[in-house]
Length: 98
Image (cartoon, rainbow, N blue to C red; front, side, top):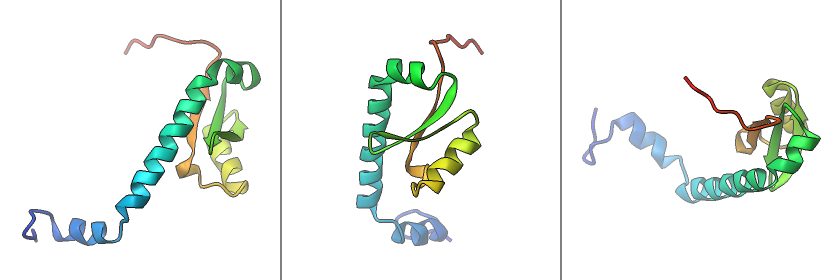
């Protein structure tokens, strides 16, 4: 069923449970951590070559050879992996042709 604003009823019900201020705060936090990671990429390449690095609040909270392990380490450290910027730190820039 579609409501008066043109949304499916299930979507409207779901959006009532979401605090858009929290979403905006999470997005700003994620952007800040992503920017920090990019600004520190040269150092990270030396310290964490070819590893997955999880960044939260502009700090490295986990690093591992596999993505699943980096997520688990972040969770074990009390950080929600979904709120981390997790990136594979390659030793050099690659050009991907698909």
